[in-house]
Length: 102
Image (cartoon, rainbow, N blue to C red):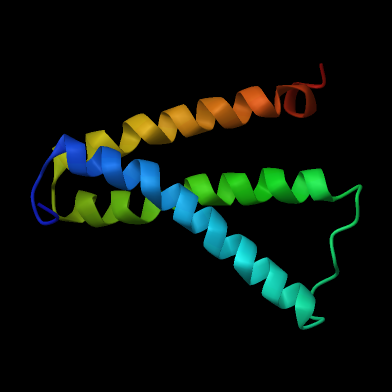
């Protein structure tokens, strides 16, 4: 199923990859903090860090999107778009006050 052109495959990848990407990026940041390479998060910057990590997690969907675009798997690409748009909508809703100054 992973080499086939299915909307369901795109939806599954689109749902799972941002969650895994968020966790990996967060682990990387924590490793850099514990090694002393990066400053630790203060209470004032914790919200910005979560917001940024969430956005980077969502952006991990760009990688499989490009892979499937090169293979011309249009249905899989369509499947990737649905969860990505939902994640972006949730992200905008969660941070609308910060983003739009309301």
